[in-house]
Amino acid sequence: MTLPNSSAIDGSPDRPVRIGLLGCGTVGQAFVRTISGQGETIARASGRRLEIGPILVRDTSKPRDGIDLRQLTTDPQDVLRDPTVDLIVEVMGGVEPTGTYLRQALQAGLPVVTANKQLLSRHGAELLALAQSSGTELRFEASACAGIPVIKVLRESLLAAEIFAVTGIVNGTTNYILSEMSRGGMSYADALAQAQALGYAEADPSEDVGGADAAAKMAILASIAFHTNVHFDDVPFEGIDGLHGEDFDLAKDLGFVIKLLGVARLVDGGISVRVHPALVPESHRLAAVRGADNAVLLESGTVRQIMLVGPGAGGTETASAVLADVLSILGTAQGSFLQNALADAGRPLLSPDQTESAFYVRLRVVDRPGVLARIATVFANSGLSIRSVIQRGEGDGARLVLVTHMGSEARMNAALDAMRDMEEVRGEPVLLRLLAEEGA
Image (cartoon, rainbow, N blue to C red):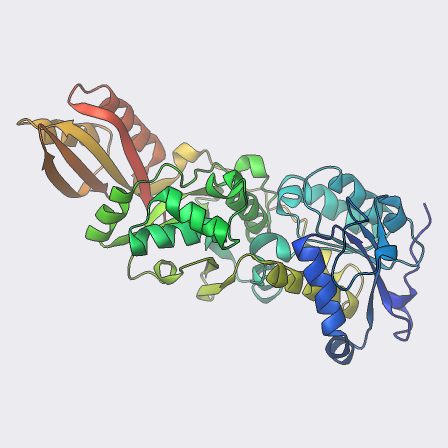
């Protein structure tokens, strides 16, 4: 392997910094347009000129605005082995073969900027270690919340702040859908269709609406906030596709809105990370985050609460974060970003059963005397305290909604199992967590 010509990064600023680009879809094209359109501004602000080199694509015959077809290649080695390339930007996505390409680049000493949350949530620690051993950089701001600089804030501004909680709306697609269902009474199917028509949701939205996208982002954020390697498989997640309109109406009656949240917390020396729909008090900061925006609330004993809000998706927004990482590499000493990034505090990952929340439970029951008392006994026997109850008759049955005080997932699961065995309960109970002052 030929080592990269790094003179443009470490040496004379007169030579342009040449970027090899892996992928040229929505984000990649936006990145190229940004460098082309803001070249003078970038040069003035950073003292460096940027230049796009070879670009890896699937189809070299497909025209792309502002890109010379001669720059395009379907062979990754044309990018990775080009001796004029100083830095690699990866926006192609996927775990493989992308991971193999980035390992090759890092082993060759090439700095890498990536927006790949799925790859980093599974192999981030390995890639960071490889970058450090090679004396180069791996940056990934765009992997978490696109245009929101949450990773930079955690790694630099709040490095010594002892973060104890990260709570986020980290998926724009689901936040848009839930906002429409809450605000306009739209059905899930209609809200999803509208999100797809506006470009907020993919043709196959399963990764977004099922919670996997948010889980990958929370694995990355928790790893950085708590200095512990949190893998994608460590994050239990639930999506929004099981929610119904009546849950939004009932949540409103109770003073809540429903959001898909990523919640990472330090609990008794361990770490709890999960993704799930949650009831958020209407007075809470996160309740006001609507549409396709993202928000991350950082809590610390030293700075109390800091919330970052902004676009969590979009080609231009993601390209902006990628470019910021490129400029940060050019403006800092080699390896500075990696110092202590791999530090492991030795904190254990908690079982989901150990985490605590307040709960919203919706049931359909037979309308007869004593049913509510029997269900209350189930909660009491499971060690859960009921905070409020709504009961509405519906023909020969009733809809029963109970909101609990804080309790463990294990206790709630025990109560659900007991209710499923009750002859008075019809169908499957619906469970949501609440975002309360104590945390969700």
